[in-house]
Image 1 (cartoon, each protein chain N blue to C red):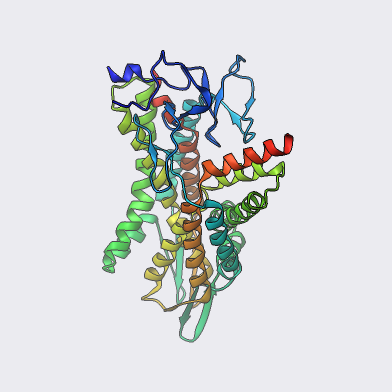
Image 2 (image 1 turned 60 degrees about the vertical axis):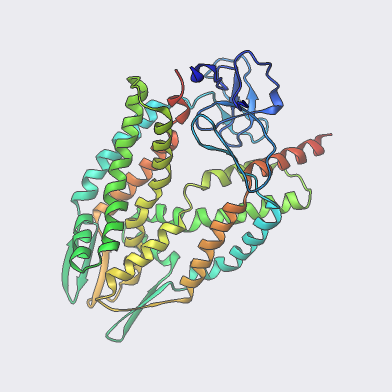
Length: 218
Length: 207
């Protein structure tokens, strides 16, 4: 029976090995086709999930996202009308109003989670993927792609989307609520963000960066 | 039986970079010395340094922040000159009264159930490692992954406040301002996210 984990006395062939990032089990590296994935036999975490044509597909989605970036952040998301008086909100407006109200820390967190991290993820991906596509090495590439990993847990547009729905429910008895152009672009940005991360194959990108570095040094 | 034959990277003298997942040979240096991953430049450790201590500190801090977050009002609605403050749980009760049950359930889960369950889940993981509880490590890893994945949803209430504060600004007619609980709640959510990040799940499998 084939056992993917390594037995203690087996000779260790180092480049053929990888470890599970969740439980540290040594596993033989396997070349698998896109569409299938390697799962840790001990803890069940995903080890490798290769994606077909990851650079081109992700780049296409990232450029789409960047087109939607400006209207999603600065155009009105919701418009409210009470007895002829209207007011609207934008993604950025929420941050500014919290800051003006004295909620400095809350506004900082909302800014990072709803604007800075999602935008930075798009910009970082654009730079890294363009470098890989054009076979161009820069010393900053590793730092930039590492930062992309750190931002992953802070860019939470999908939560903001649900917050928009909750706000509509809360205000629907009080006033007339209309969706603005910003909301449609925001949904687009959210979807492109999800598509970008589901098409991104981090393992392959790291290998490409490593190859570019070796090519530069040789 | 089968478990004994499995070899971890640590016991083989190897270590994995947590940022780019490259497997590295462990040089014989003192554990406190800083090692950097040759591929991505991140600091690498066999196990995250002081992982359990940091996670304990952050989990307890988050638990303390959750008390004022639920006691103080999270926002004040002034409608036609009459101010009305509401706490997180008031918001849920109001939605139940308005027959918006699904939204009420979503808010209850995101802002009350998830933060508390997350902190208690982390404390369970910490105790299980420190007191060597005989729990299924695979299920504990799953628990950790769930904790990591659901934490972000607690930001729902903070985002809602940020939308409502910006949207409802009609002076004396209708105005919404944030409350003290927003700061504490936001702090609790951010601290629990950091607590989950500082926990090293590989410790579950170490003997």
